[in-house]
Length: 284
Image (cartoon, rainbow, N blue to C red; front, side, top):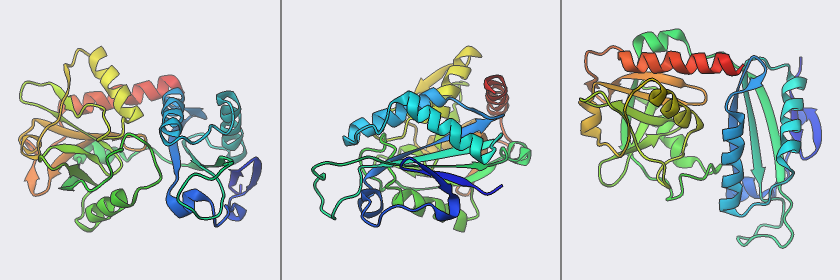
């Protein structure tokens, strides 16, 4: 089956999908996006993702192109036409096409692109072995809470991880405190057994998986503390892990050159991973 994309009201072969060269998303990164996991043909936390999409549009003053019900109908059709049972759907909304000029165009028309693809869940070996992350300075803009397509610093951070043989880069602010990963949220289990993650603010993207894991942890009786933590505290933590739409709950067993605890995924992390997998199965 050939892949099908949605581009501004039309369903077209993926290989033929096009946007105009003066689309502001292309020229200015004047656009937002969302990625939603699909499990057994259904969206995982779709409502939370669409809430965040609408917020990102409001923050950048980009008009919603259609009602939520209409957007959901398009998403369902993209998933159906691509025959996706397990994978993800990607959508990108830009301010529109206009002659290149920094100010907003006079009569912008929000552009909408959607694609969907098959995908397997993270390898069980990741849960068995854990992953390595590195740390580096956070050089992003001060509105990381907006899910903008302006991701160059994130790309550089992810590439740095790849070149270091690591899974992810955790970024660090000027005070030496961890913000988040290049495409993930960062977590530790501290010496008292509490689950610690940076609070939602303009310094991080408030991950939808992040929110779900907080809920699951509280339901399990785990104390959740939303506060910044330093690189040093992270390296001395009982457990470290990361979360995202595609990574679910992934144990971290090495940070830079420091092994975390005994070098094995921690029991709390693995329990939360199982709770999240059970949630996904229930949703689907």
